[in-house]
Length: 399
Ligand SMILES: Cc1ncc(COP(=O)(O)O)c(CN)c1O
Ligand SMILES: O=C(O)/C=C/CC(=O)O
Image (tube, rainbow, N blue to C red; front, side, top):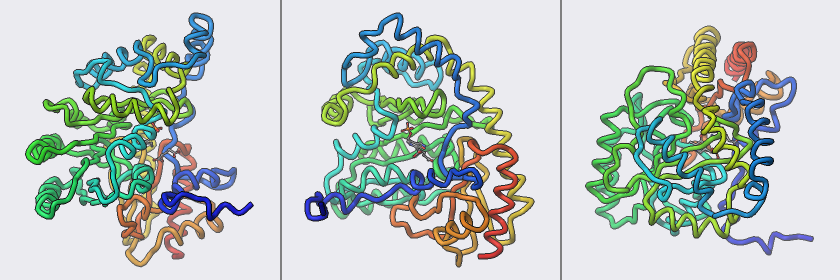
C-alpha cells in the first residue's frame, strides 16, 4: 500500500539523524568516530545487575506498574540533592521532571514552546538532534557563532536587538555551555553571566543542555548557568546517559513549576511516564553512589583518549586541517580545507579507508558549512583512535 498521500505535512520536516544513520557503520572492519557513545567498559554492569534484582525483589509492583508522568517522587528528590551537591543548583523535586533521555526533553521544548515562525537561537554549530526535534515545529533557527570561549555573546546581544526590533517572537536561547556537542568547547564564566544578563534584559528563556559537565578534563572554573539563575528563566537538561548507561534512556529537566507542569501535560500524550523500573534503578544508583564513584576513572580514561586523538591528529593530518582542543566531553571538531565536502568524503572514507565520522553539515542551523566533521574519542579503543586518524588523514590527502 502506498502511504505517501496519507503522510502529515510535518513529515516534510523529518530528516534522518546523521549520527543515528552512522550506527550502521559500526561494523567489524570500519573504525567509527560517529556516535557519542560512552566507552562500554565504563558501564557499571555488576552494580546495575545487583540493583535490578534488588529493585525487583524490594518493590516489584511499583517498579513494574504505570507511574506518575513527572516521575518517581523519591528520584526527583534524589536528583535535587545530586544537583545541589554536585552541580551547585539549588532546586526541589517539584521543579524536576524525569524524561526518556534528555532527547525527550528536547522534543517537549518544541511541543510546548514552538509555533511556526518562532525564533529559536542556538550556538552554530549545535547539537543536530535538537535541530532535528524542533524542525517539525517550523521555527526560524538563528545560529550564533562560537570561539574558543563558546558562544560569542556580544553577537547574541546584537542579534537579539535586531530580532526584537523587527518584532520577532524569540522563544528561547539554546546553549550547551560545557564541553559542547559538537565542538567540545566550554563557555567561560564571564560569558555565562553575560548571557544571563542578556536574557534578563530582554526577558528571554535560556535552555541549558548539560550532558557533559561531569567530564571536564581541564580545571576550568565554571558553574551551570542554572546555578546563577535568580528568576526561573533557565530550563536545565541533564542525563544519566553519560554517567550511568545510555541504553536505560533516562534524563531530567530542572525548571520552574510552570514549565514542569506544561512538560508534564505534553509528556502524558507522548509516553505516559518514563520506565519506573529504570527510574528506581537510577535512584538506587545514586543512593549507592555508583554514579559518582566511577566518575574520576571515567574522566581520566576520556582525558587520555582525547589526548591520544589530539596526538594522532598532530602526527597524521595534512596541512590545512585544523581542530578544536576540547576541554571535556566526547568530541573533537575538525575543519578540513574549504574545497572538501565531508559528506562526499565520508563515502570514500568508509568504503576505501574503513573509517567513519559525522559530517559537520547537520550541526549548522542552515547546513551552510560543508568542510567540517565531528570525531568521537570516547568509544573507540586507543589503537582504533590512532589507526582511524591515520586512515582519515589518507582519505583527506586523497580528497
Ligand atoms: C547536547 C546533547 N543533548 C541531548 C543528548 C541526548 O542525550 P540522551 O541520551 O539523554 O537522550 C545528547 C546525547 N549525545 C547530547 O549530546
Ligand atoms: O553522538 C551524539 O551526539 C548523540 C548520540 C546519541 C545517538 O546515538 O543518537
